[in-house]
Length: 509
Image 1 (cartoon, helix red, strand yellow):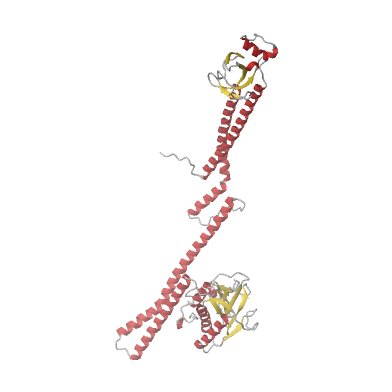
Image 2: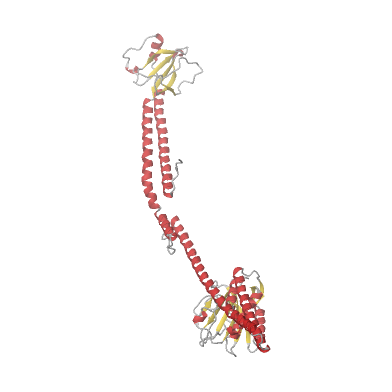
């Protein structure tokens, strides 16, 4: 069975780390104090040894074979813990010594001139049992040598007591850190625990939950800010997905509805031709023309759907200089051929939105000239098809700074399928304005949607459905504007006419 020593939770790891660090710090401090204490005590012993000298008469008595008197003079009285051993001139340890005790140091029986210099204390073990002695050699008269010894029992006893005390302190410190540290870590991680609980609720389906600890001065607060930002983006993505799915379902339903009518017509006239082989040539020709017309309508619808799909999947990669003034002039010339009864004029974009505030000049943007020409053609066709005869139609070309009063930004009465451009940014503009009846706000809100057609009060389509319109033209134009990082917008109102405005960012700075 494998034992897991590493805690799984962050709280357990923090408590373990704090316990190890605190216990290590305590033990290191105690070990340092113990070392210094032992060194100081041994220094005290060495100081006593080096300042003690055997009295000269002791050398003569030991050399003469006599022992000191039982009660020597006061100046010859030895401290009770001192022991003095003598070596003769030949370096042999003499049996006679000064001092008494049950233990004695383990000394060499003979010494030579090559032994360590006198006056340097050394530590030697006891002759019997455990324990150590501190000894120092001293030269005496007639080549004799004396070794003064002091037991280290008091030093080792003090060191042992301090060692056990240090270990006890370490155990107490470890237990205290584990208990108090666990409480402190639990309190310190309470904001993180709240983040965890919020994440669990979100995982359970409560997607509208947010983290409440969002102080930028703490790590958990910054984590909460990042977590809330991630949640906002996730919720936005889910909402976009839901909207996209709803739009896709509606798009498929509208596409099926648009295709059903021409398909039904084609099928009906084909069956009529098959069921009535004796049909007159004139009626047969009429049936063939109606089949061809509905097939052409289906072909245009499929081409428009394919173009929308292509624009949505791959933004335009052609970004070449485009003279918007020349583009507008070409579009007006083409509209004159398609709608000879209409009069379309070209003017410069003025500060107030009219064409009499400036002179025509070259306005160079960047983009795909074919796609931009398609946008302008669609806007001109709509203006010619959906306004009464004699309505003034004007195309304006110029540049402006994005803002609610000029264009490119939202304001009441203005609709667009694209996002607002940065306020104050320079942009090039092509406007198609008319003095027609305008659109109601309810219709203007949906005019850029796919398959949407405005119906007047009598209920008949007014966008040319009878002529083959499918309600995809403005959706395609708006998508083209978005692929150019621009925007197509509409300013309108009842009896105020319509102003369709194509804005392209100025990429020259």
